Image 1 (cartoon, rainbow, N blue to C red):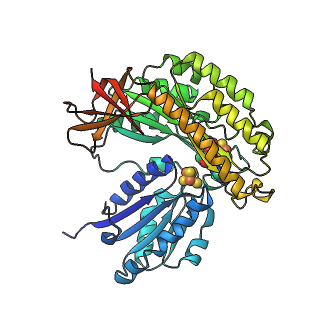
Image 2: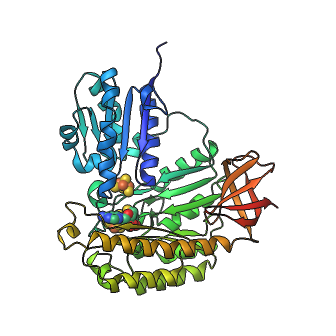
Image 3: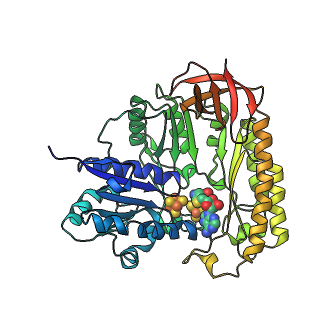
Length: 439
Ligand code: SAH
Ligand code: SF4
Ligand code: F3S
C-alpha cells in the first residue's frame, strides 16, 4: 500500500474558518490525505486566510514566501490558498506569488478534490465562484473519528449588512442559511463522536432563517430543536448583530436550559454620528436598551463585544461616547481593533484618523475593557459554576475547562476526565483564568 499523502492546513481569522478547515481536511481525506502538523512533511500546504484587516492579508504573503525553500526541495509539493484572501484577490495571488498552485474561495471548498487532481497534472487551479449548491452537504463528514468535547457548526454564512468598513459581504457573499434538518443531523453526529458543546456559527448568526418542517425557522427555533438532542449539554452562538436580536432569542436566554449565559454582540462604536457613518443602522441608545432587555431575561449573562477605534472622522468626543458605552455595559470580554482601511469598502475613501491618535485611543479603550473583564472574573470567586473539562492543564494533575460564562477554569488533583461536566466552586482568580475545586 502506498503511504498516505500529507496535508498541512494553517487557519487564520474567525471561527468560521476553523470550521471550514475541518471540512476541507475531511474532504481531502477522501483523496487519501491525512493531516500533519509540520509543513516540512506535507505534500500539500493550505493556508485558510482572513482579509478582515490589512495585517491579516499581508501575513499570508509573508507566510507563502517562507515555503519557497520547501517547494525547491520537493517539486511535488502543492501550495493552496483558501479563505477570504483567496476570494478577495483570486488570480492576483498567483501573480504575486507564483509558487501558489491552487486558489479556492470559501464557497467552493467542495470542489477541492477536482482542483487538487488538476494541480497534480501540473496545472494551476482557481475557483472563486458563488455556486448555488449547499457546499456543506457535499462536504459531508467522511471519517467518523472521535472528537473533543466542543465543536463549531456553521448554520449561516455571508452578510447583507454592508457596514462601511467591512469586507465580509464581498468575501463571503450574500446571507444564506442552511436547512434546519441538516444542522440537527450534523449536531447528532457530533454528539455521537463525543461532542457535548456546540457553538453555532454565522457572520450574522442571529439572522438565521433556515428551512424547517413548517416554513422558515429562526435561530431561537433552531436552538430549541437542538435543546432536544440527547447528550448535547451546551449551546452557544456567534456572531450576532444587534438589529437581529429577535424577541424569541432574548426569551430563549431566560428559558432554554442548554443555552449558555454568554452573548457576543458587537456594537463597534458608542457614537451615533460614527454608527451612522459605519452604516450600522442602530444607535448607542437602542443597543443599551437591547442589553437591558437581555439582562432582564437572563440577569447573570456575560456580555462580549467588538469595537473599532479611529474610524474615519472619529473625534475625541465620538471616542468618549464609546468609553461611556463600555462603562455602562461592562463587558466580560471585548475585542477592540484599530480601523484598517480595506480597499473597495466605502470608508476607505474617507478622511483617515491620524494613526498615533488611533493608537492612543485603542490603548485607553483596552485599559477600560481589561479593568471590567478583571472585575467580572474576580466576582466569580466563591461562586458555583459548571465546567466542561476540555484538556489537561500545564501542571501535573491539573484539568482545564470552560464555565458557562466562557471563563477558563482549572482544578488540581481532581479525578475528572475530558468531556465531563462538573460543578466547581471558584476559589481564585488569576490573570487569565479561574481556579476552583470540584463540588
Ligand atoms: N460579523 C461579525 C464580525 C465580523 S468581523 C459582526 O458583524 O459583528 C469581526 C470584527 O472585526 C468586527 O466586529 C469589527 O469589530 C472588526 N473589523 C471588521 N472590519 C474591520 C476593519 N476594516 N478595521 C478594523 N476592524 C474591523
Ligand atoms: Fe461585516 Fe457588518 Fe456584516 Fe458584521 S454585520 S460581517 S461587521 S458587514
Ligand atoms: Fe476573516 Fe473572512 Fe472570517 S475576512 S474574519 S476569515 S469571514
